[in-house]
Image 1: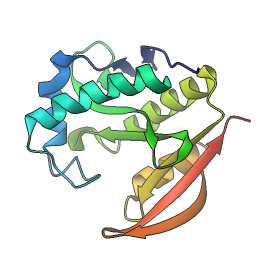
Image 2: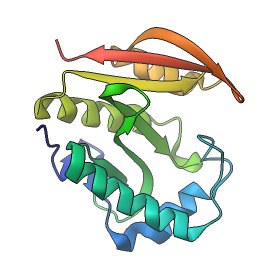
Image 3: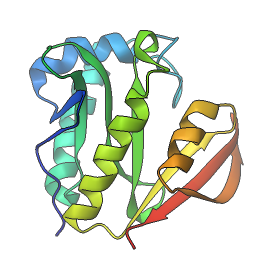
Amino acid sequence: MSVMADALRTARLDLRGFEDSDANELHEIFSDPATHTIGDGPITDMDFTRDWIRRRRQRRHEYGVAWYSVRLVGTETMIGNAGLFTGRTGPHPELGFEIRRDYQRQGYGRESASAVLAEAFRAGFEQVWATVRDWNESSLRALHSLGFERERVEADVRGPLIYLSRSAA
């Protein structure tokens, strides 16, 4: 089984697996309507955030995928989260990333996604998917710059969802 590293580092970012003690900072991100625009939107239930962290550790154990807190190098400030998850893209993991609104448009999303993608391929995952709403132009640009290609579009109650993929080769 492929297993991703516990922590990653880029020139500007430290990415490390979530601990229970990260719940308050993560919940600030999840509950911010200007930042957490994915899924059903902002999350108000702190128990959900705690359970989310627990589920990420469980998925790591079951599937080898990792989800990381994203922090600026040299600080303890969590500016976002990024990683791989399993589910809607079949046997291949899906990449996700989210950067706190006041740190967006500085390349942190692309940088964290790039680190996660490189680690996924290093760990042996052969293909990685991403899904993005059509209005999220910044994420689409970041994914295209990382070599992701549009595969299909599916509509749900919230509108079009673009499926993109990238192979290791």
